[in-house]
Amino acid sequence: MTAPKYKRIMIKLSGEALAGEKGYGFDFEVIKRIAQEIKEIVEMGVEVGCVVGGGNIWRGRNGIDMDRTTADYMGMLATCINAMALQDSLESIGVKTRVQTAIEMREIAEPFVRRRAVRHLEKGRVVIFAAGTGNPYFSTDTAAALRAAEIEAEAILLAKNVDGVYDSDPNVNKDAKKFDRLTFMQVLEKELKVMDSTATSLCKDNNIPIIVFALDQPGNIKRAVLGENIGTVVEN
Ligand code: UDP
Image 1 (cartoon, rainbow, N blue to C red):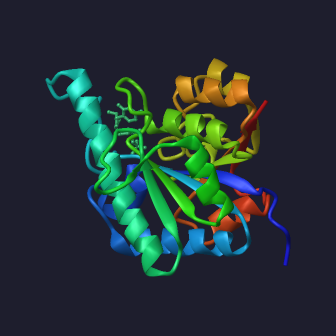
Image 2: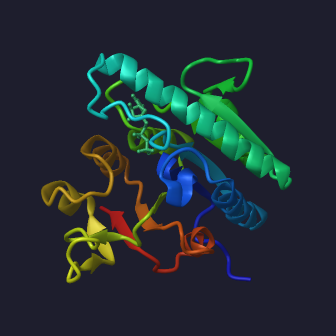
Image 3: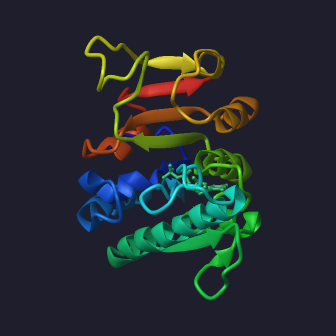
């Protein structure tokens, strides 16, 4: 068996990834498949942290006339609901997990404690980081970058609904060109839609590569962990 390229990784799943085709709420068949793919890499000995988004339930910047901070906290709570769905799916197939939240809700999850998170990872538990960074005006992409730095993850696996980063929208422009590799500087300068600029800068400054790939292609999480060229790698 080929050895994994990474010992410890962070997987960022957008909320929409959990919604499947519906784009809203949950598609439990999709969540089950993601859980199965995560199980495979855990069994290969990879330590897995996971940040989930909330876009399938609520986004702060959705244009509704509402106080931004309140809307953002609602988004952070949405990520907790998603984290519990993913946790349940993983545990049901025998993967040990812990959810840690950036906003305390001790009855349902541990508060985020970096040292404890690292200890869980060392014991082979998947740690799902919920409630984003705990601060409004941030995104779960930034939470993924922050937690990845804190747990010293070697890479962020950014699972998307497209198979990499393109120079224009491949759904609109059939001649859109996919990049195999980009630098963080290129992403920032060209304003390419990978992560938001806060998250991108955090990865750049802390030298954490991002692997962008399509989640709907079964087996891609394992391929990414094995170092196969399946999407776009963004690094310094
Ligand atoms: N959010 C926030 N601070 C954070 C992370 C998330 O305020 O640190 C809020 C924000 O309103 C965001 C929502 O939670 O729109 C859901 O997160 P995100 O949009 O990143 O989810 P995704 O697009 O990955 O599903």
